[in-house]
Image (tube, rainbow, N blue to C red):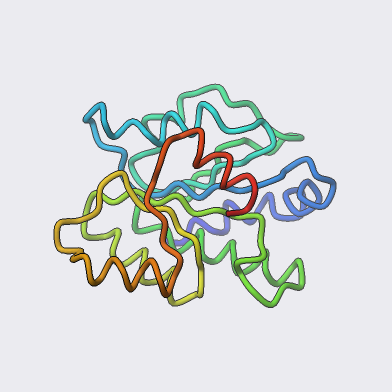
Length: 179
């Protein structure tokens, strides 16, 4: 997908909001939340994020929280939707554009945290793309796919700083701190 043009339409306004401190952090929440109660993590994150955080979303998880009245930040909706899981490409385009606009050398210096849901095989393609871009500190959960062996998980944690999803409160605190 290429919904990036829709999200980049608020680009200048979004950059100004980051520079002024009105937007403290972007949280990428992509993937599926699922119907089981144990998978309501992303809805709880959306409900509990500070008012200066904007959610960039792609995938079905948004259907659990896009109906929430989270308001806006200076006219920028607090949920910006890139589309379905396959549209995660747009979120990468936005991150790369923000890196360029802010004159940063490393994508990890952006005020963006990645909180990705594992539910289907498409999540593997999304993760591989983010790892290729050099993104570190991605949170994954609430459950990992059965095919991720302990050895593979150790490589992901040690080489890419992959973090398992924890509690909503602890994860929000870490993401807002840029971790």
